[in-house]
Length: 235
Ligand SMILES: C[S@@+](CC[C@H](N)C(=O)[O-])C[C@H]1O[C@@H](n2cnc3c(N)ncnc32)[C@H](O)[C@@H]1O
Image (cartoon, rainbow, N blue to C red):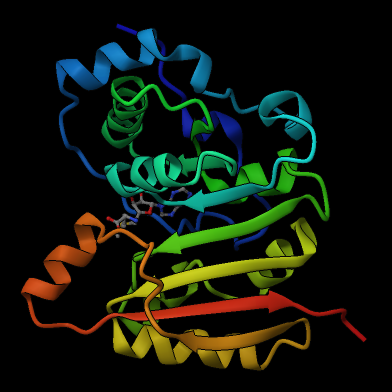
């Protein structure tokens, strides 16, 4: 049995109110393949600490790095990494079986441009990503937290917009996709009320693979909204 990241040991990000998390605990069992990948693909799993990730040492000098928050089973992540090997991908999720699954997929396809973290992405963004360093952020099908009393758990909220704005390069982007119409509206309002961003709904990019959650949403008849936002200088 490999040693697992204890998310509580990382402490809070300081971005959300104490005790508030954007994710929900899940109890899916880890498979043997996922378990094995933690050992066999260990060089691709980055530890969580307080040291900024050295992008040049990890991916190469000048390689653009895109952060994916909440990759789920990681199949879409591996597919995007395979079609765009010149982009470095930092893929973060809290869900241990998904982390093992992505590590296994990286091994199967001999992909070298992805690094995986089992962590709260807000903790990593706060402590381990240098300001102005990310080329982009992808958040595909974030938990919609539909009940009003849970909206404080949504990843798209003003303090997170501030945080991601500070970590992106000036020519960077944040690409979000959701199957929840009310969340899509709330996302547009949240960015619209922030002076540091421009952008909105875009046609679905043909290169974005259908994710696991998206497939289920389509089967259940929900429509998908892709949104892309770019940072602008705050006056
Ligand atoms: C609804 S699922 C979508 C997964 C995948 N993107 C897809 O479309 O199939 C949301 C994912 O985000 C992850 N997540 C939520 N908040 C997170 C955070 N703060 N840091 C890392 N992962 C997070 C959850 O563990 C979950 O795997």
